[in-house]
Amino acid sequence: MYKLYCRAYQTAYRGALYFLPWRKPRLIEGENSLAELPGILKESGISSVLVITDEGISSLGLMDGLLKELKNNNIRYSVYDKTVPNPTIDNIEDALKLYHFNKCDGIIAFGGGSPIDCAKAVGARVARPDRTIPEMKGQLKVRRKLPLLAAVPTTAGTGSEATIAAVISNPSTHEKYAINDLSLIPQIAVLDPLLTVKLPPHITSTTGMDALTHAVEAYIGRSRTRETMECSKQAVKLIFSNLYEAYSNGENIAARTNMQKASYLAGVAFTRAYVGYVHAIAHTLGGFYSVPHGLANAVILPYVLEYYGESVHQPLAELGDAAGIGSPTDPAGEKAAAFIAAIKKLNTDMKIPDKVDGISESDIPLMVKRALSEANPFYPVPKILSEKDLTALYNIIRQKQTAPI
Image 1 (cartoon, rainbow, N blue to C red):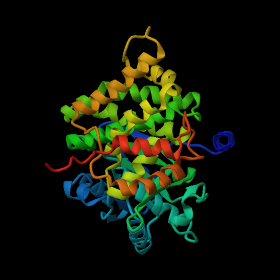
Image 2: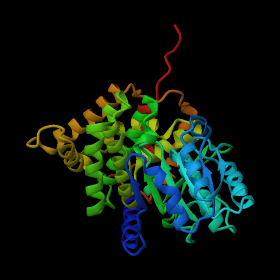
Image 3: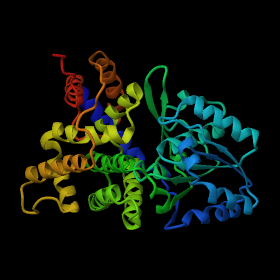
Image 4: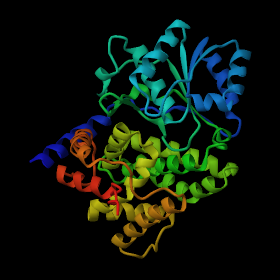
């Protein structure tokens, strides 16, 4: 009965999606495309912006050109660079105060998924001053127009520049949750590959695997559309063709450009088709142990795909065909196995571990509860898993501690 309830919920929600006002950001693409943003903001009537980033980005000087051009266009700016990985409510409220103090009328999110999520949440608070962040948790709780938001990703993985989601963490409760609303889709997205050239290899690899997880989970789920399927296939093909090159040769602009495009396409796919248990489990690992989201997804993805079994053989075979993995004449089960093996090999080649270290057995029951609460009944997963299933998965991904001799 519970599985029937989940499927009925998903069917009703999927039907409602067709009547929502979906949109995509205005894309600014290519080398040095960031230089175009200040002029576009000026044309849009923006006079003062809050730039939300983190200390790492700020210290690298990646924003220097942007800030100079904002000044040349007579656009006042303030910088909030205290965003932490897995942004907190304190981050959001501190940035919000700066937004109001400087009488801003626009926001630029500059960085990886965390600054973009923080910026979206600040925009939501500007639009809904009557609601706290926890009160906007879940689906369609904002429903107001945000101030102009431009997203400038410096990683190729989260796809946040295309999505309806902002993921927030609460360190005191080890909780990590999403605010999902169409108004959170940025109005402008800047895909400038030069911003990703200096990414360290380990961040290139894990953010790239994050994008792959988005594309795969969107494709194997039951809410996929013709558009999301095509976006997922394109993203998977680009990732398998370019991620290892971007990881091993970070100066390759073509590989960096293709990975940015893959991340964006995967973002378009999963913001409509949603994700699944890989993300639900990854969010608990981020909340409890601050495991970076891309790393968690990279480790978890092949195990969850194997656990789904026959329910994902056909869609994984199709993704394998798109990426040129395996033989086109092989049975679907063999193609799916080859696709999962290719994911594992990519992880190994990029020195991503195959287990998550530090998971306490005593934390697993609460993590299972939270993962199930996130995933069921909402995520349109190919196979509905139980508490027993998720417990088994946590134990599979957990690095067992060897007893001292």
